Image (tube, rainbow, N blue to C red):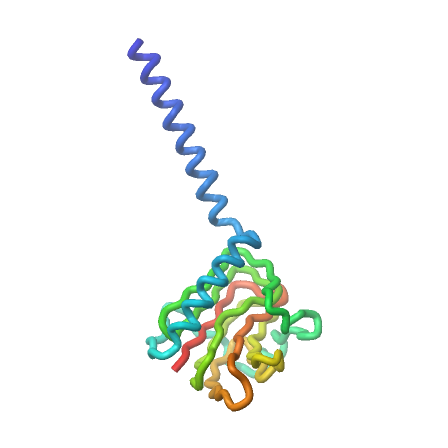
Length: 188
């Protein structure tokens, strides 16, 4: 009787482990509902917390700052519906980390458009991005869906934004088979 009870408990433990693994793997996968929910939550955090300076995340490797090589990584923006309010993208192992005045979008593979930040006051934006291969740009749109600035990858830049003609700016990543990369936005 004790042997049967032990075997029963072991089977239950194995079943629980399998269920935990399945649930854990499903959380690692990317689907539209998860991406949309994460995107809405992190955008709210960035929009509400744009006033403090944050030290740069120094864990990222420095990219290639060569302008010539950056030209080869530019996306054909005509292929994408950048001005859509809804993001449309596919990614593998990606995420958007935010703190006050800071957003970091990282990915293993990324194609499409994804909003990285919303900005609703006069600020200076420090921009930095890196990819190993593929194409990636970051665009800044005003509230009338006009592209204000197109930022190249594997570069760093400071952009001053003022609100004389708009009430909000969107910072969007636009990728075409971009591989192993990140975008860092610091808002001052």
